[in-house]
Length: 331
Ligand SMILES: [Ca+2]
Ligand SMILES: [Ca+2]
Ligand SMILES: [Ca+2]
Ligand SMILES: [Ca+2]
Image (tube, rainbow, N blue to C red; front, side, top):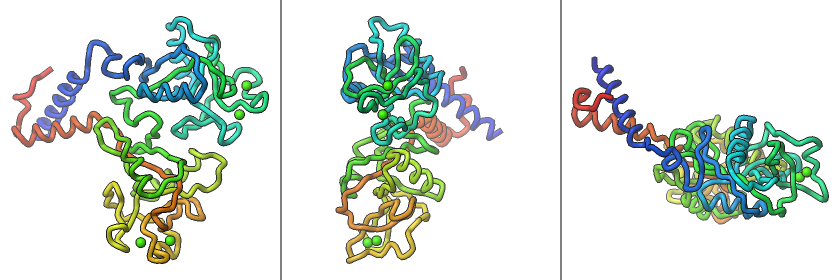
């Protein structure tokens, strides 16, 4: 009986919440302004010609990023929307570039293009170098093109429902969103940069915490993938003993016990090493070093989970009115 009541409360809470989220115009609640909801994502076809960097900046300023489709299905969605838009230029930017590692196309979140639809003979890195990925309006096929060219483009954004769990350019993995920043920063600046981002609940990012070996492996691979071909990238994570020497804590207050120190570390060398890097001499291995050192950083935030709020709502209702199924609207 009790579990039935709990189940009813939960279902009712989900329904109440769903009806709060729902709206007659799907675009108005799911997508940033100017984007169209299509096949689980938000897209915007921009017909004003810009170079690749300006196109990416435009997408980011409107709450998205250059679209980075990685399946025929996603290409088909974009082609459908292109077909519904007037005056679309023949050439359209997508988000992928291969400027860091020739021939490997990645988007701003580190996602690698694994299902390209290359036009015949492409990518040919023609004419002294072509490092940005362009879609043909008519065929849906891809070409590498010089990034300075001014052409149309396609932005995409997460929708503000279940499919929107990480902000644009953040990579979802196992309940968290991650982003790698290659710009060298001190530990403090790296943490401040992370905290300048937040999820749709308003929860800020922090330098990544690491709860277990699987997450350590993921972060190691994620860094390598974000900078393909650049060798081992020493990168800040959030572990530090700034407040109490020898007592390491995570900036996001994770309470797990997992560590992956190199043998002999942390050694607090010169009594001046209070911050932790990953990828010290070997992939995934940790070392403490001076917090002023400037290097890459990896940030992490919890995913946006609208049904998490429903779980909390169900808990609160259950707590407040006990056996409450009769008091809730039945739909
Ligand atoms: Ca190239
Ligand atoms: Ca080409
Ligand atoms: Ca220390
Ligand atoms: Ca050390």
